[in-house]
Picture 1 (cartoon, rainbow, N blue to C red):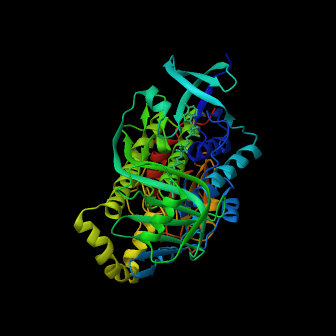
Picture 2 (tube, rainbow, N blue to C red):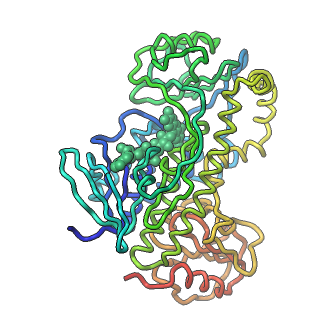
Length: 500
Ligand SMILES: Cc1cc2nc3c(=O)[nH]c(=O)nc-3n(C[C@H](O)[C@H](O)[C@H](O)COP(=O)(O)OP(=O)(O)OC[C@H]3O[C@@H](n4cnc5c(N)ncnc54)[C@H](O)[C@@H]3O)c2cc1C
């Protein structure tokens, strides 16, 4: 048997690929396997949120994603007899280099991440399925079945299930996946549409249900998603059925043609009862699935991965205590629960046949939505939520405020904003960064994994303040003043030993 791995990553969807990208950057000994022979060609998630772009920028893949995607998509909300322009992404965006929703098919996102790994000599081992995983003697013994029929046994200190909604790792770990399926069936097609304003994403809100058109580019110009008309019994998807829906639910004369992919699907809202059990971790769809409303699923999965990867890397290299791994569930499970709650609400309002909600959708929303969209405060809050820039771990176990809290600026657990511009990129990397604002005496070295940076007047905090930024770009510790006693205590706890 070969030498044990630090980490076995099971599944090479966007979550597994993001995790592998981070583990590679931090020199962790790992393998990534996927049972399918080819990466997904169909385009599931069509959009990447600003926070995901920020976090992936640390690994040099964001420029390629932005180059391939469409960052200038306008959002249109169609009500019977009225079309609204939805300017969600034009307020509250001045602290990010990516103030836009990037439209890019999931297949392209996966292609960019796979190419980034290949450039760093990581091969995604396709046609390789995890069939069992037994923890014994400090390692997990994993049986892998290869597409050509052979089997292999590998040992790994940790196994991360990025293996989607039907996760084998979740089953092997004995973690429950609780929730429900919605009664509605949805129809999906990638196709061409004549008569639809290009360069925009369209949502048609009708009394009967919802119809979406997202601009894709490849493998077709448009992605259609529609609620199945309730009376239709068959789940078979035909172009005629989709044309019928477009005719009934829109007042525009739309001609649908040349579908390259048509399918139907049910939507579930489920969550794993734990994100960790012993040496097993769950991330992405293996940990949470919900409605695509708001474009959060893939993005939440990628951010799960980037919360976990550096923690595994630090623990495996002996720099951080095992206890750091407990903070993964403490930080990410509340994020997953919140996404499930918010998408459930949006889904219920958008699809319910209850007379009050139908009235809200078709009569009240067209009247009140323009007022809401004129109010910059609520719109900015909506932007922070949808863009995922507002995710924070303030109540998490790795977030500590020193004796005096700075009067303004990010708190412990908040994301580091990109102020001044380029700060996020300068602090990206496997280590922590200590940011100093105001005037400071010389300070002795603290730890070889902690870089020190002095900020000028354009700092997120008033001086003098010191803030420790984690490898994933969240503030771990912050305090006003130049006394570093609290910071040293924090470092003793979370970075106690020199790496081996
Ligand atoms: C129609 C639709 C629209 C969506 N729109 C959006 C959107 O706008 N925005 C958004 O953020 N999300 C969206 N999503 C959700 C998004 O597609 C998923 O959240 C995302 O694919 C999850 O990524 P993942 O890597 O966690 O899992 P997956 O993409 O499911 O990948 C899991 C991988 O694990 C592999 N695997 C499974 N079992 C094993 C095993 N035993 N051994 C080895 N490999 C295994 C599979 O082959 C697969 O490649 C949408 C989803 C759908 C269906």
